[in-house]
Length: 461
Image 1 (tube, rainbow, N blue to C red):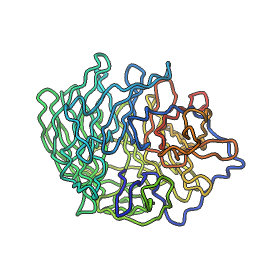
Image 2 (image 1 turned 180 degrees about the horizontal axis):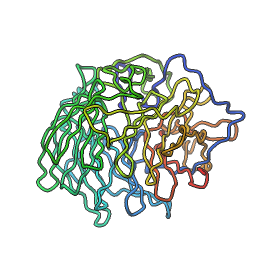
Image 3 (image 1 turned 120 degrees about the horizontal axis):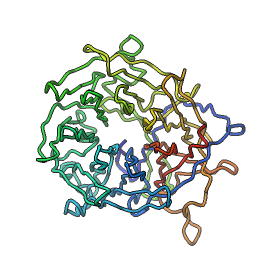
Image 4 (image 1 turned 120 degrees about the vertical axis):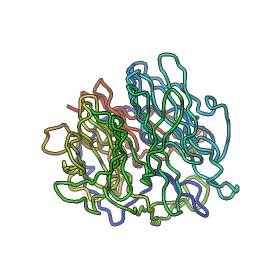
């Protein structure tokens, strides 16, 4: 999700989306905490402590994490879970040969990273935030680059900008056909809407074919068992491209036999988000809250089962998991509700969902809580379960994993994302990335500083 910048606004966190009149449900005095080990991402790669959905396990068992350094650059970081070490493997400005700064920089890797059958890592770059005080305009951003990193050789292939001035939001390969599907994002707020082009990239020639402008904010692309690619459309329909027939289809959707409700956030043509902003550039300055409306639909996280026959979906602000059978026929994609992620929660935020290698769905979701801010839970769903399972709120079991203050004891900038509740250290903002490794361990990406939280498989039984 983007930050928004207005007059006197310098820092706006994705973690500050606060629903109105929210009441927390979790009793921290009696709750059983889920332990996680924290690993800070190299701080020079995420200078404001932020990151996005960008985490995936490679075929080599290592994690690949994209970073965000607004106005500076972005990097792909490799985490070796055996050695417990991180290192930079891709410097985005270096591989494109342009070290532009400010709004012209490739400030984010915002894509959900994907792995091809070859083991190569597919990701892309995206714009940051213009500073009106410096005269920066959205047109200053040249556009994002799809990239493919090969862990076997250490080489990165950079593809041309597909749409000028638009970043890369999603890239999903189909190496069997020599293509990848790409989704762009214009971040065209507060204008008439989002541009989100759904394109085919020829991996050999580097040329693009534009399929449709979906206008859907932050759309993920999945490829099913027949090689058909799916992308959400503004208003609730779903577009499906079949490469075997070269046909683009527009599908309706239902949930439990009925059209999706506005409350589900699956079919919204507009989203209203409450955000908090700082009143001055000083870290720790007071926050104020306002509501912003986007005519671009609601952020919806998608992922697909290992057999590519089931699509799972979680709208950001809906405490619900949905599933669609991709083997069904016809022009309507019939979905079903699988139940609440946090039973009884009044206000939630879920931007982190994935399907693990064994088919289990994982959601890193926060509920608004007066003592924490956004209390992080880890939730799972195994096909056949009666409902999702809440494993409980997440606690950091190595609270000294990084420095939070300088030599004089002053809090470091952009290090306020963790809070102590008695003897427990936990994160306090929304989270944006989650990934299950083949080991069974689950990794969650927390903010301020940007941190990977590893929940061990043995604690998830």
